[in-house]
Length: 413
Image 1 (tube, rainbow, N blue to C red):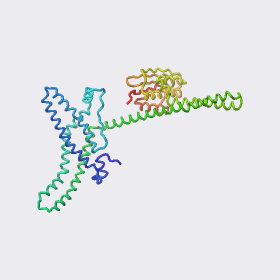
Image 2: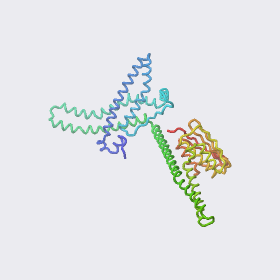
Image 3: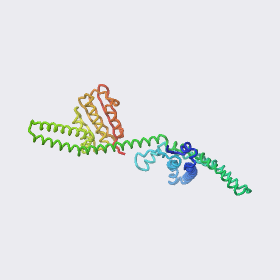
Image 4: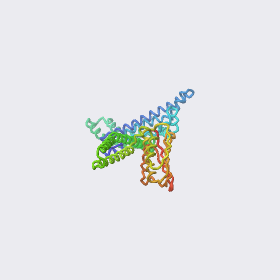
């Protein structure tokens, strides 16, 4: 098991821990905590004093305004400093501004609870934490230092007495590694709880999961396009050539002869295989979607549906490729469900871009009763919509009608 914190090193290997770098890292964490506390107190005191003295001027107001924002700087440094005793980075819980510019950044930070929480941490650090850091260091090393210093008050000791006492007092310094590491771990845990709340860590991890899922979907689409291209340019062209050659050979044979019948049968089978391959290619990734966009691809699907379909899909321009692919397969699977299960007489596909989202609605006048959990392909559509940072809802009461509504984000990270 990989050791991520000083606490883990101490609890898992109480003796081997002494030979590791964790005691020294913990010592550096507490020493830097004392220096940070003293430095922060000096800087904030200077800002307050000079801000009050220079209040009639604009500079004084700027200095005073910098005081509540000082927590942002200190918190960022503390999250970085915490890596000394905790190898897991602490995520920054602040959300990005909704628009660029200093004013938008200030407005966002002032309205965030985390900003004031970090300012409170600065106060606690100045008036309490660095004093505790100093106290732990003083208690841990005061007794060993006092013992060694006391040797020099006894001038009657021979030289080997000094050596013996020095060696005897060394274990006291070794023992000091334990309280130093324990307090450093507690200090880091408290800092993480205040400056990187659990919700922020979960949000960062969920964000990374969403981005990873989006990357997988994009890679999947690239692979689908490669397979479609290979089938279109390779196997399909060979089948076309085979069909043409069989047709020509069929013309050269006497009508009604056994050879003509065999070649004719092979010709028909080749044409069926070519039709099935074209349908497979269209299912993998339709070329019309790449060439002409979503409205044309939706019209093509509607034209091949056994149920009459009206397409009302109006877009201002091309959407991102991943959004087009997700929307196309939502339409395809929904119309396939209409043909298989709904017993509908008509279906309608509507689509508009509202804000930064594509809103699709596929409705029919069938018998209803569609269930996402019943294995009709709707669960897969819901997963695909979620992977495109969207949602899919199905309204299908018994007796109909059925409405499948998908909202897909048009923003690509």
